[in-house]
Length: 445
Image (cartoon, rainbow, N blue to C red; front, side):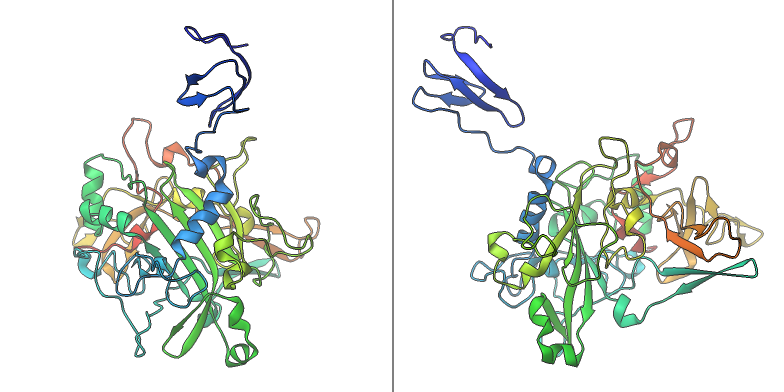
């Protein structure tokens, strides 16, 4: 029983928090916690969820997916067309945001120059459609072979049309923060590090990464593209197969990933706790109303991530068959992106006319001087590497020394190691760049 001082005594039957939901046995009209309780109501009206990204992350992911995939208003960046529905043709809102991947980069230009205002023209093909400016994947497939006791590792690039078809973009809020803080150049990132301030994007910043596939003439004739969100570029038709989203609704961001239901079966199951399966033995789900009866009904939520670990202390895993192929079981959006950093400049230390630390020099702990895009001979960035461990090898039969080896691409999972960022004397080794890997495309001024 809870007695409210100064009010008529009331027996409170239930009191829950976050959000408050009060179900009293009411004897009088009373106001508490901002809720007006009246005798003629069996329960109070609940307060709107103050943090849906934490309390209902899968619903929040679908809500965000609906927003960024609204058709875009022609001639504007990041503005939805109020007269179009989700199934209508034309580019989506996120496709008008600024490109942060290598090809066609609009945020980290050549020569580290200021990328300019938000409203700039987008590249178009000869028919006037927005160009699809694809970049290579973030990782290569790794295969091992053991012959006569010798291990040979080969990096195998899949066909370009199968893999070199990814793009990443950032919305206006995030873009203008990068420009304001001068983070669009490598020098600017190093200057920001010297201030000892924290890179902290404003609430409302959203990043997306998309993976596409090209349809063959036979597939187009058979009507396969009708099940996909598609885009045309220079006579080619592309279908969206994978889609990452991250939004600054939490200090360490909110993470979600979607993909097409016709993709290869995932190595880990879909973890959507919001929508229901249409068929217990299938993969399609009952998508939210705005997406029904359109190609969007063939997309599924793989899962969401709001923390590095779960309640047992185990690393939270989240991956996509298209964007994390080959490493889904050890993929963590937060674990990987936490390593997006900048350290002290070291490529300008010259001894006897030569760089003391050339590109590729390892820097403790698990950092490296990485060549700068389009400036490989004249500049290097000191950053933590993408993954602390690239591969893990073991034999299929531990008792047989000639048994085939299994290669497992290992992602950065679990909570970050504080030693990556701060040394024992309290000095900063690497400055986190607020989980954004796009910063690695910045060049020297």
